[in-house]
Image (cartoon, rainbow, N blue to C red; front, side, top):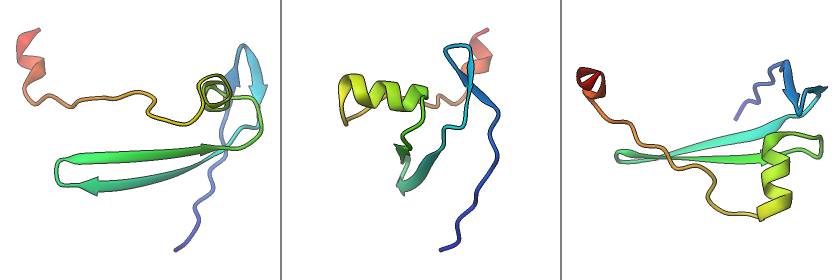
Length: 70
């Protein structure tokens, strides 16, 4: 497996941060699981993990045809 590193230009609480995270995706039929492992730098991922511990973060649903209800 090859590693893909991308430079980020993100801020956390108004300050630049060198935060990075490892991402993994698993597709199970119509469900896609996304795994996020943040590094030690300040980020929304690190903040959530430090505050709440491991577990499910956001759960999102893709709804086909939603734009028809605007």
